[in-house]
Amino acid sequence: MVESLLRKKLIGRALADGEHGLARTLSGLDLTLLGVGAIIGAGIFVLTGVAAATKAGPALSLSFVVGAFACMFAALVYAEFASTVPLSGSAYTYTYVTLGELPAWIIGWDLVLEYALACATVAIGWSGYFMRLLEGVGLGLPTALTHGPTQGGIINLPAFSIMLLVSGLLALGVRQTSLANGLIVVLKLAVIGIFLYTAVPHVDPVNWEPFMPFGWSGVMAGAGLIFFAYIGFDAVSTAAEEAKNPQRDMPIGIIVSLVLCTVIYIAVTVVLTGIAPYASLNVSDPMAFALAQVGERFAAAAIAVGAVAGLTSVLLVMMYGQTRVFYAMSRDGLLPKVFSDVHPRFRTPARTTLITGLLIAVVAGLVPMQEVAALVNVGTLAAFIMVSLAVLYLRRAQPDLARPFRTPFMPWTPILAILSCGYLISSLGAATLWRFVVWMLIGTVVYFAYARRRSLLGSARPDTLI
Image 1 (cartoon, rainbow, N blue to C red):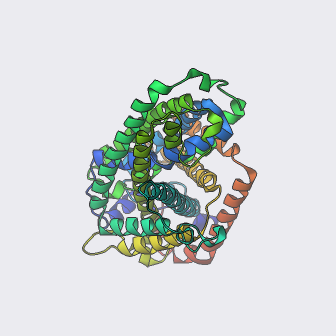
Image 2 (cartoon, rainbow, N blue to C red):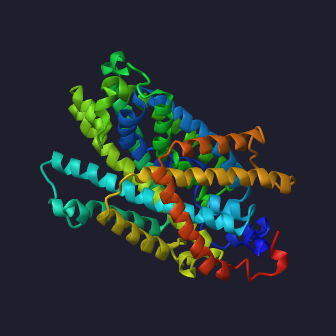
Image 3 (tube, rainbow, N blue to C red):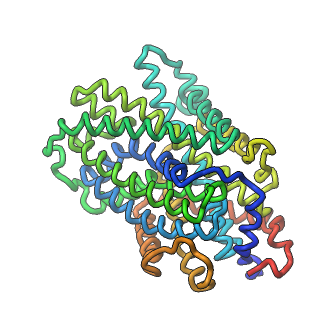
């Protein structure tokens, strides 16, 4: 019984399965832009203000440093796995070839929650910025079409529509998605440059006092909240099966995008809390709000445009990650086969992409997402811990395995990743942790009721198991 729950895929067999699936079209630059596209989004345009006002104050810059350290340890671990096992599925696949089927299912189920709620949350945020732009040019939609039923409306039409649009683009092909994402990334980096250039002359050091109004516990609480801003590099690892040279390019895409975005986050946070009192930043558009407060209204409007673009690219990458996790789990038999069907022309899981996009669009259009960022974060942190455990195990179990990229400072890097991610989980609220536990219990029931009996590995010959 226990052996069947911990059955593992041979790495060689897993790589062979991936040779006949998705088209390899992405370069190292594409992967880096994919990471930047996912990381620079809701975290910088929305969560910075909320976290500064309610958690950390001006010390939010330290929160980003804490989050970056936890992510960098995990990113180095992910880079080794992405170069060694360059397949779709991210943490799910890495866990399947090391720790076994049940741990892999748990992480896959976790990633489903992470990406779906992240997409729905960002779509709702996109809707808010889009409506602000429409109002700026004298247009608008009635309340019935901008709010869900529990908020006095019928449907959040912009949120619903953007999810359908993103799904259609992803279904057409990853190369087209990559090109669109690259253009959007250039635009939003330019807008962030405008913010820094315009805001720096208005910085008043008085706004940085007191620097840590909520103490060190506030810094950690801020890190737990803004960790949402960093989860994009995980989405890069889901693209391994579509990278031209994954052994070389996956580590580049993961690490470079994380370092670049960390520098940007810290710079924006320091300047943002320097031009406006931290307590005033608890708004949905803190960067535009702060610029408007110092009289830079044209720049504030430009920030709104950049936010719409930035959140669009986040949706593209998060939705991409969602469908690739479904694809990997379905290919292993743990989900219905429809999720791994590849369109003969576009070479993408088009049907899965469209169905998943429609379901998330309905959630974004009808449900107000409260405190979802924290729930997304706990799922991401759990995945990081599992992958770190997996790389420790694989180093011991298969020391001679070819590893184009090797995590430095073993075993301390994955150990530090486990400790730092565990610490951040402990800073999240009890309600968030209980919701996560309930989701995991539902996933366990689904595994024993469906996935375990349908697993292709379970029906395979003994020589396919490690």
